[in-house]
Every structure is written in structure tokens, then in C-alpha cells.
Image 1 (cartoon, one colour):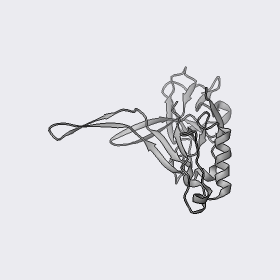
Image 2 (tube, one colour):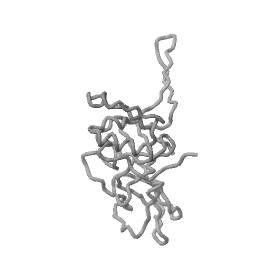
Image 3 (cartoon, one colour):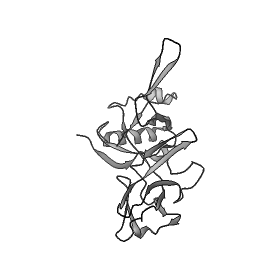
Image 4 (cartoon, helix red, strand yellow):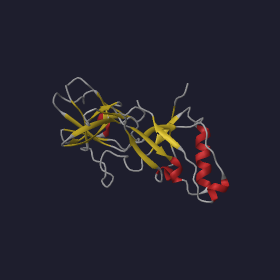
Length: 212
């Protein structure tokens, strides 16, 4: 049975990777010329090609070593999305007011980190399960909280408030953070041809998101 290794795909390679979110929609063409669209997946799933970031033999060997250490598809790992890796837009710095993660009721002490994507037409709430340790900052009704009042589980993406600091009823909890995507290799085989590589042909290294 496979598991998860709390290690990150080499950052210098991830920054050059290609890919992004994938959704699954069924489109049925009706006899009157109209169409009917049905959403098959509730959430999007990210897919990447790690080979896009490989620029040298040293990079290629780093991927090979990482692949073997994960047992191919057997173990998942962390991957930094080159575009979407923090609680705000890529040209901004994370702030404790970025994302609403819950509303207090005076009893609940744990809240999951989430990121909301939306506009006037709709929105989608994404669960964040792999925050980067040491980057999470939390605010309560606009007041930034000291780190001593809560703890963050970097493995599950849960914020837990300490005794005596549980949010009161109606209080809005917000957070800012950096995060990784939990992924695995989408193949048990990486085919390397050095002649092709030296000629500029990069091997495909498919990665797919592991949904919680």
C-alpha cells in the first residue's frame, strides 16, 4: 500500500514545469442543436509535466533519484505549483486576511485551510492540505493573532486553536499561507535517451494531484 513522503519535488525543476488544473465535463449534443453540460468532477485536479523544468544532465539525474526514492507511483510527495502556490495572487505577498477559513461558534477549535476562487458568476472552494510549514498566519475579525494562540498541522492543513483562544460565535477566521500540491508520479517508467536529450528532446515526467 502506498503512502506519502513529506518531501518536495526539487524546486528549481518545479519552477520550470508546465501544467495546471483539469476538470471533467460531459457535453451532450441534443437533437434541437442545443447542448447539455454536466459536471463529472466536483473538484478540479491538477496535472503537471515535471520534464519541462529539466535543463541539464544534473537536473535529469535529480529527477531520476527522486523517482526511485518515491518508488515510482507508490509514494506521493509535495510539489510547488509554479503559478498557484499561495493564498493570494502570484504578484502579492500572503496576508493573514487573505482567505476566510471559517466562522466561530464558541465551541469549534479546528478549521481547515481553504482557498476560494471566484467572481460575480460563481466560486469554488479548494481544500489546502499541504501548507508550507512556518508560513501560515491567522487573523480573527481583522486582528492578527500571535502564533502561540493556535497550531498548524502542515501534514493535513488544519489550524487548531489553543484552549482559551477558541473563536467566539460569529467571529470570522482568516488566514494567509504558502502551500504545496500533493502529487504522485503518473507513471512507473521514465524513459531516458541521452542522445535525444542532448538534441533538446526532454522526457515527459507526468505528475498528478492526489485528492484528499
